[in-house]
Amino acid sequence: MDSDAFRQWRRSLGWKQKDAADRLGLKKRVIQYYEKGDRDGKRVEIPRSVELACLALSLGVRRYDGRPVPRSAADILGRAGPAADPSTIAALD
Image (cartoon, rainbow, N blue to C red; front, side):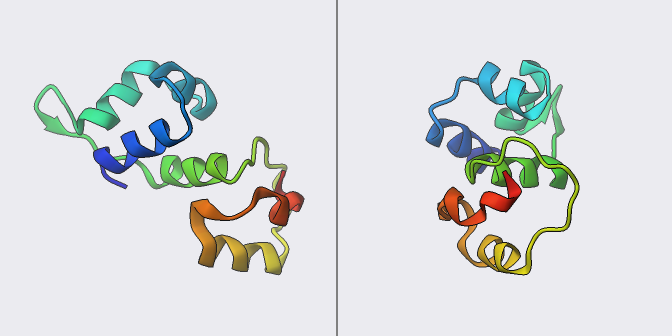
């Protein structure tokens, strides 16, 4: 996920930078770095864990208890991406 994709993700959910920071457990400043793509002239990469958290939030997942994901839900996640209907993966919510 690059900085433009991250910004588009946040905006597609109608969230302000502070909203995204709160939901991802980050500081607003970190969100700003991700969207800008650099910090003090040095490139900032968005960690894979943040990318995956963005996907989960897009799918409506608010909490995860660590249980294995049912195979059918894993297939949905793998193929459908952010457009998947959250009700189809209710086991993750």
